[in-house]
Structure formats: structure tokens, C-alpha cells
Amino acid sequence: MKNIYYFIVLCTLMVSFACSKEEKLEPTEMRYDYFTISPDATDEESILRRTFYETNKIHLLFNDTLRHEQRGTYADGTPYWFTELLDLSYNITGTTDGARFTYIQDIRHKEEAVHFVETYILPHLGEGLRPYSIFLVEKMESYSYGWSETNFYNGRRCLALSTQGISDMDEEEIKEQCIDIFYSIIAGKTKYYDEELTEFIAFGAPYYGEYFSSFQSLTKPKPTAEEMYTLGFISWSSWSSYFPYESSDLTAFLKAVFYEDEDTFKTQYAEYPVILQKYDIMKEVVKKKGYIF
Image (cartoon, rainbow, N blue to C red; front, side, top):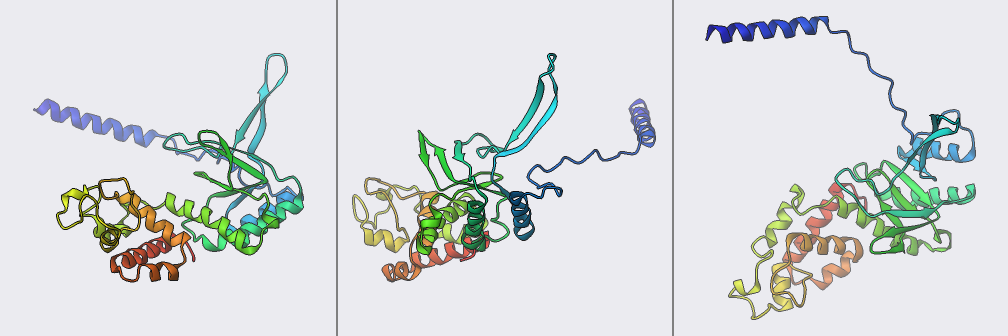
């Protein structure tokens, strides 16, 4: 037992001695942020991007190439280049579908695109929802079982926005297009297990995923719309034999908050207090996430 004690003491002394001899640590050179504009850049695009960041604290991009540097040469003297791309589909937890795009070519259209973002997008995004960077392009496509045009791509470190046709839209058309963007951002940050949704989930907890047949008080073989509304459900499958799950219920009300007029919705479901309560809870959750109505 004494031998073990002496061994522990010896190890402690050795560690203490090593720490006392350790050289003072110095920070290494900080990695340059390739989203940031060089202070020496004076071209119109650089000034536009720098001003946007100073105003909104969000990096602005018109090109997906973050850096293109010569790192050396091959044996035959050919330069070796290193290129870092934005990589919209980057995801720390796995892989996602990709996106492809065409750049905005002239400065006037770039200025119009910035005006669109600052007028219709950013005023609705509180601090918790604002992206690290915004990538403005002319046209964009996303891949999901094939390529198709899209108005936006919400990546992990960047929100990419297509500006094609914006100048020809009236204000109402632009607002309608923006709703899809806002819904996507909020939906990505809202899960049924969030603490803010505890009260919302409590209304449906006895029914989520349960078979209709498990409840003797309901009409057989399926409950009527009146019964479903009374229980607080606004969306379910006509062919299903069981109640929706938490995630489906959440999605239905989240879409109602974004895509339906509040007065019209509350008039439609005026006789169903549970639905009205769930709607109000969901709207408050959206506000807490940082969305500004």
C-alpha cells in the first residue's frame, strides 16, 4: 500500500516539474476570415459588401469562391492553386442536397438585390435568425431527385437568395415569395421537443400516433372533422387510421401562422378553443425564435 502511495506522490512531483519548465504558450497567427472584405479593396462591389456588413453585421457574397491562392509549384514549375468554395450544402452532421447558380453580373443589379434584402428580408429576422452570410445570385437551382429552380437555399453558414425577376414583381408578390424563406428558416429551428412548445404538445399528447380505435368516445371507424377540430387538430390524413404525430401537428400550425391570415383562421375555427390556443402558442414561439411580424 505504501509503494502505491509513494508512486502517486512521485507522479505528482514529475507533473509539477514538467509544468514549471513548460514554455509560455503563444497564440498562433489567427486564420483570416475569407468572408471579410480586404480594407484595401476599393472597387464598387467591395464597397457595397463592406457597407452591408457594417450596417447589418452579415457577410455579403456575390461569388461562391472564398479564396483562390497559389500554394506553391509542381516539379515542372506549374503553379499549384488552392481554392475554397462556399459549399452551400455543407452540414456538420452529414450531407445535404446541393445547389447550383448563376452570378449577378453588373453592379446595378447587385445594388437592387441588396435593396431587396434590406427592405423585405432583414427587417423580419431578429438576431437569433440572421444568417452568418447572404449569397445573392441571379438564378438558382437545388437538387432533390433532379434539378429544379428555387428562390432560396438555406445553408448552415449561408442563406443564398435568387433575385431573378424581383425587379418585375410588385410588393405583394415579393412578400409572398419571402414567406417561403421565413417559413424555411423558422421550421429549421423549431422542433416538437423544444421547451417553448411544451404547452402546445400537451394538448395533443394523449393522441399523437394513437389509433382512432383506441378511443371509444370517437366515431368509428374514423372520427369526424368536428371531433378532430374539438381535440385541436387542423390537419390529418383522410386514409390514416391513427392521429398525427407531434411533428406533423407542429408543422400544420406553423404553416397556419405563416401562410394563413390570422383573422380568417380564427374566424374559421372560432368554435374550437383548443385550436385557437395552439395557434396563439405557436405564434409566440415563432416570435421567441426571433421572427419579427
